[in-house]
Length: 376
Ligand SMILES: [Zn+2]
Image (cartoon, rainbow, N blue to C red; front, side, top):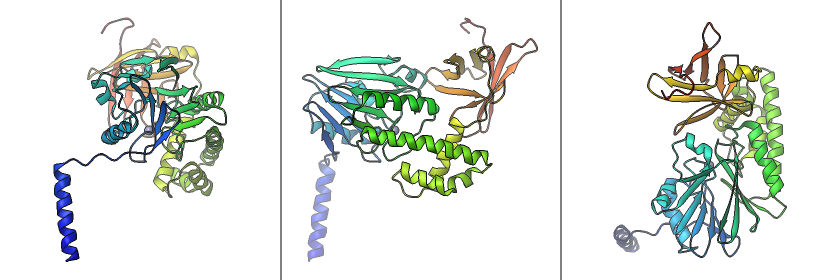
């Protein structure tokens, strides 16, 4: 009888649920001040979210994964009934921009660092190095970096003493500095340390709310990690052996909260090598500059090769951005890429660069150099 009743009740509840939509679950909200809140995402939801409320609207920092949209909206409704008028994305990854389209369709401004133009992520406003916004009387400072991505934004709210790092700092996970390398990662650490005091709330892209001491701890670990991996590489170890080294495992356990994860460890080893420890040759400014230009693939795709701050980049609007690191005067590694992909420049008898070949994991793609200033 008890079971029958439970079954009946269950069936009734199921029928009720299927007619009337179950309200979306909500996430934990940290109230930082009377106008500023942080929504703490769980591991599968995507990014943490900042919520700055003014008398007329809401500015959001990051919008989680697309699948978490209903939960984000339900959680927002527990904070305010004001409309979202501005979204700042710390970078373009899908786990930080999931509800951007939703809010843009409702008229919100979507703000990202300008290098987002080399991806397929939507935006309505960009900035290059820094941008200062005032929202409801609150100052919001944006600083652009190449670190985790080519379009990272560090966000500082000085009145509330809060810093959002995006994925340039994640709590409970190792640094993933594959676009900007150690230099880009260090620039983010430097800026964070310069802006923070011991009471500053550091909101990571993912993980628990942190303090500057947590960021400094990770920075120290990263220095030691890179030296460790360099020593294993110099000793001629295989990827597998490096991943199973006891000291590698100890670093992994200090960086992350995740359980033993040999594949994750090996991938971090491989990406560290592919980002920071390639055997590069040193090329002169003139040698690098001679490769600059626009190139056209047979399928119509273009790539621009550009020299900036002594580094060579390959990029295409709406599509692609990568740093190129010289392995020889003509062969270049794509920084952070672990598949062995290469750009190989073809030089004619007169010493002029005629074209380039992208060597992918399964196919090669040839491009010819376009004449400078030519529209074709
Ligand atoms: Zn992320």
